[in-house]
Length: 300
Ligand code: AMP
Image (tube, rainbow, N blue to C red; front, side):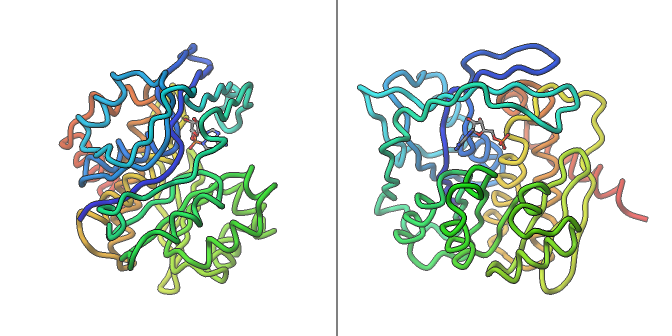
């Protein structure tokens, strides 16, 4: 079943201890869509300016992403973000952010996308995420991501959004900030009490935890000796998870567990090179291979 993804599309400049990547494809929806496209057809809704390179459009198309919902403002500039990671990769500084066409973005879901059964609200302003929820009809399963910025400046909108979705994804710092709980288990349970049936907390190199009324599922990160660029790891995690769910047509705790492992595999490939470069080269057999390796690694 197809998956609708709404989020940011940007041109990033990234600095890590492995070097710099100027003007590369980025944005929460770019990472999530390309990751999800390994599993099923993606309906992407986002906005770009006239400066958005054609080669990026071609990449989306090649990766199973339908662009009917991509708005292009020919006299505007694409969203731009510049970030620099600290040597341990756990933290980063935003050096520059230019919203550009995002300043006036009001997501419009094309009529033929409104009944898409699976929906992913990738990281964007929660007010825009709510606008998407107002336009979609009877979705089977809705997931959302967010970031510290929105918890700082639009907390009430994040709370409103949480009451209307099935799965919320946050990293451990965001979950602590949102719930006031330092303990991951308490934080996960508190997230569930805010509305969604499921909550996933990402712990970077320490893996991820999935919470539901039925229990908790924890998975380690795929063991990598070298991380080149962690940008978009979280977006690939949720893209992989939702791509798998959409392809299965299911939504139980057991299905989400498998989704978390697929998400972990997608994130591990993403961080091995700058931007989406490693996902461009990746084949579905690679995804299946890492899924099997994680299953073997965690079985006893
Ligand atoms: P992540 O590493 O998962 O936080 O995702 C990184 C991506 O988020 C980059 O490609 C950026 O273009 C994008 N990004 C950075 N700041 C924002 C923002 N305020 N809203 C939406 N997307 C953003």
